[in-house]
Length: 151
Image 1: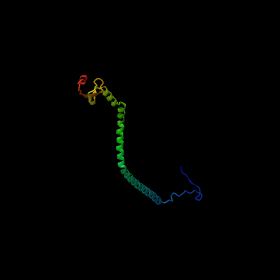
Image 2: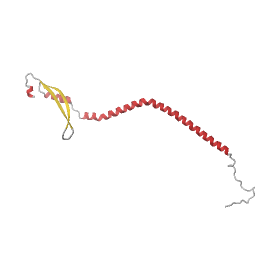
Image 3: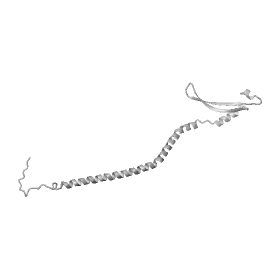
Image 4: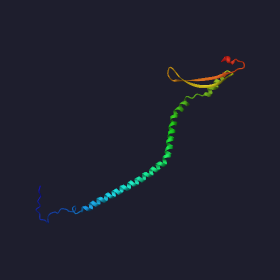
C-alpha cells in the first residue's frame, strides 16, 4: 500500500527523531562500562569465596582430631550395642551356681572332694542343636574305707 501525503510541508506531522540523535559511541561505552563493572564484581565475589573456603579448610583441619576421636567412640558404641543382646540372653538364662553347688555339697557323702567342675558342649545327633553337659570330677579318701564302697 502506498501512502501519499498531500498536506503542505508545514502541516505535516514530523517523525520523532530522538532515537536517531543518540550517539552510538556513548551506547557502546556504557555497555562496555557495565560489563567491566560486572566482571569486577565477579572477581571480588570469587576472591571473597576463596578466602572463606581457606578459612573453612583451616577449621576443618582443626576439627580433624576431634572427628577421628568421635569416629572411634561411635565404633566402640556400635560394638557395645552389638553385645547387648548377648548379655541380655545370659542374664535371662542365668543359673545360680552357688545354690546348685551348695545343694550338691549337702548331698555328698563325707570323705568325697570335688576337684573339677566343667561344662562341655556336644552336638546332638537328632536335632543338630548343641547340648551342654556338666562334668564333675572328684576324689575320695576315707579312714574307715566305707565311703569308697558307697561310690
